[in-house]
Image 1 (cartoon, one colour):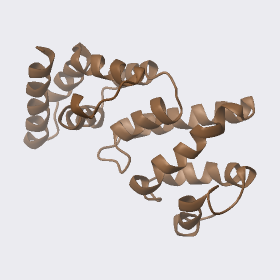
Image 2 (cartoon, rainbow, N blue to C red):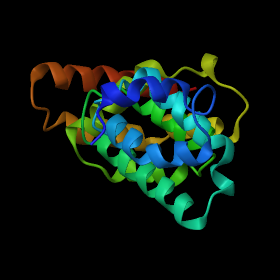
Image 3 (cartoon, rainbow, N blue to C red):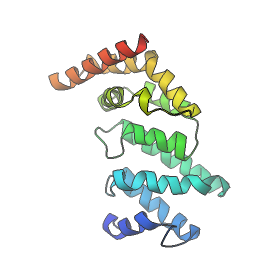
Image 4 (tube, rainbow, N blue to C red):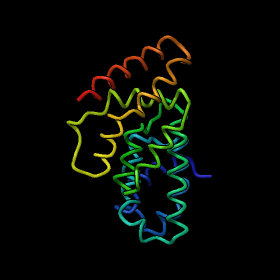
Length: 186
């Protein structure tokens, strides 16, 4: 099985310097697996690889498109269930909604349904990372902005606050709840 160290150089240059689309499709499942398992540097490779997928994947076979959607869905769920992650929730949201142009709403609904402390900690992180000043006019960004200002983030944070694994996590969630209260008033 190819390791991250073996595929890392390819991941950084796939389609631009090395290989063609068929070769990229051949290595893509393993590259995605390595990203999900955090064996391949997600911060460096995730957006680049998924941007390359996003350019042409809608022209791929139905089975290949379904595989991409299923893999990204599994990656999203894995991200929500583990904190912290190399590929944080905002990067995942950008991959889903911007690179792949998928409807973000079902992914946000999945977040709302996730009751893990990890999902709540991702929300706390996002409450402090997400700012309207970094926004742009994309439809998905407006959806995300409205969702973050709505009741779902508070519910996610409150649910986890009462069962926090440590006082530090409880404080992190409490701080994020306060940030949400301030945002939702505007």
